[in-house]
Image (tube, rainbow, N blue to C red; front, side, top):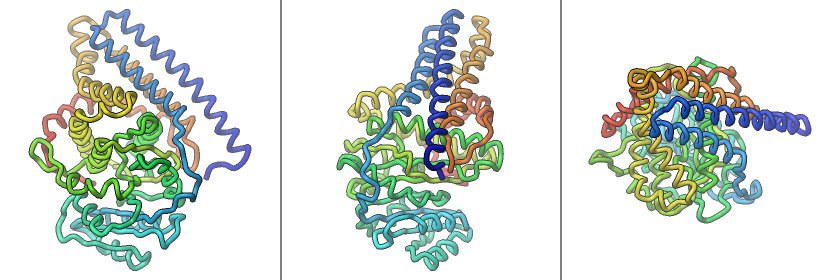
Length: 428
């Protein structure tokens, strides 16, 4: 729990001051770094890339600081709720998820939980039946693996609740997360609430410690900026809340989505959010609607997940090109800038690390120093703002992201582009 009274407030104020000064120093160094690149006569295209990256990083921190979504009074809005948890080969992990749902601070007569066994090949079915028996939840068993979208669509068939909550089978919700999330429905135009997700298994390996910082930074900065403009691009599958009336008409289109002639078997959360934005709805982020999720603990599983996420990003971003310009100006600009920077990144990194040194004698250590500066800035932000009950890992736990990001940019992203039509899920 957060520290009570003046002690907690004083600690938070101290952390905010620290973050402000570290952000100020980090911004100053970023500007100096850009000036150094100019002095080295870097090609204007690559210099523009560096400027754009620096601007997006700074803007994300700025919007984190100013993001204050309008909220209803806690408990003011208590609609009927259906929570849907699709699961495949999760074994006893799904029971832990169900336990957290059973502890939700919400009227029992207004909430129902549906667990969907999507053709699991292990004992997931046993644990889902145990959840049904122990907690009174509904259980659906599919005879064969249909995919996450179809599993959710099956649970939606008889859903007459006002609100639908989608939760991953390896996530756990804080007791007040639903009440906090529902506070975000302050306008009929808001169709989806993205909760905040931290890492459950944060201290297991160096990889989970690194992802702990990644998750925190991504939610706090990326989604704060998007939420400011009512345009969160991906309401996370780990924990998100939807108006049933908004998503019900989209379910058929969502479960049958295709890309380049192939049915989409991943990116379900990003795909559903994309459809809502296309319809003109708003999607926002509520930091106090908290959940925790289990992240990959070894490189093989992590690579599969990241490859899947990059394919999803590319597919949904290309699908959104035709309608994101209708969103608020800030959201539109950021969307197109981030997509452009992502597509450019393999060429830029190749230039700074390989072509530049050969063609013009550019020192690749200058570029690596810039990446290190960015990571240090992120680490400082994490340590300044990550207060209990979230776990805090070592300050330098994000540093392995330097070689990991370079590898992902030079190898994984191009591979995702070349294999974007692949339908394999590559689950844990």
